Image (cartoon, rainbow, N blue to C red; front, side, top):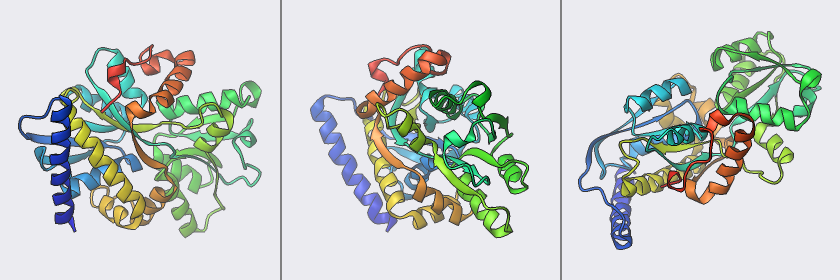
Length: 331
């Protein structure tokens, strides 16, 4: 099966090269020695792993590897040291880098929904029901924290009505607090939610339920801009100017994302080879509930600029103090 996939990628590259040459765009002169694809423990990384396993970029580099990063701070270091070429990223991070003069590009947006409010409180059925109640989360400074802040403000959950936020060190810490009953409600990403629910079911703990996805609450709160671009793939400084490689990457990623959504069980087994600390069942469950939909960044620029604009009103430094230039949106 993998050989037929590699053959299809080679044919696709040939067609892409012809199209790019006809359009007068730059084409890589020779394959690179190595490409490093990086990502977190989330569905945005799963197509990257499939690309590595199927040789999707074999015609573009001698070696293609996947590297797992555990926090946005670690990703920032990897990018600064140019130790990764393409990485899954929250959509605001490449905007910050571009606005600081770094030649990076956001190639696509592929994750539009992965955050869930979880609760053991049967009275909590919507975000509004969290008014004045404790809420556990792992996010303090990064994009999910900004989204949560804007959502709570827009729903009037501020001041005395604001949830009492408590911050866990990481997802594992949050899961432990919920399993032991030390926390009753939380905002967590997939696949942490699927892992939590599976562990809770095995242990026979107090019932935990998915209250509402942050994206559903966002759509109801901001109907003028219902789609919420959260994560995608950025090209780092060493590859951002290679338009042919960027276009090939986006095509391969889109193919792999579609495969993962169509074959969640097979995708989960493949991902487990690289992220073996995650049970296959939790990976599969997370694929089924995550909105994994690859779209070119320039095609969803209005959605991105709507989000960037909202962040600019309240946390301008979180997007680099202005909207990115046109050339930022790839591939």
